[in-house]
Length: 163
Image (tube, rainbow, N blue to C red; front, side, top):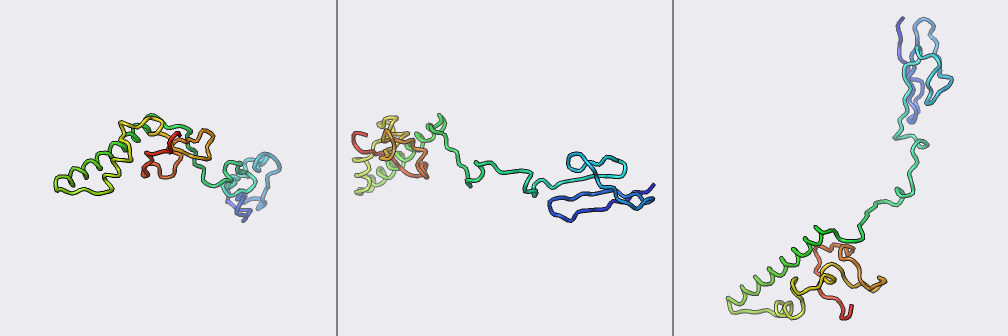
């Protein structure tokens, strides 16, 4: 008995392949079962659904409707804090190097003098100032530094007095 395969549906969502026997030249369609499993499995070869394109099969959840989902933890981890301290020390070293190079040549700049006058060094800063920053919209007027956009590239050392 020779069997040939015939595609019944041209729909982009369902693609059913049926086997046709050469004797009867008739197509038996499935009568029951999930996803069209036939009663006579000798005539029916396979039935497939393209699940990724079928609109009724997989409904998106509410969380997926919002576009990009960036979940930020509410506090800094220990390695993030260590990297923040390392960045603060690196900036201090750069300012020290520039100041020493200018002094060797007998020059000074207002920017370096102002930095030393206004900005505290990493060793002088309180942990509260290293890892949080002032925000007038927050309940306690402080928010974690990693909530600031581009927080690894922006220097936030000075906060308003009393906060």
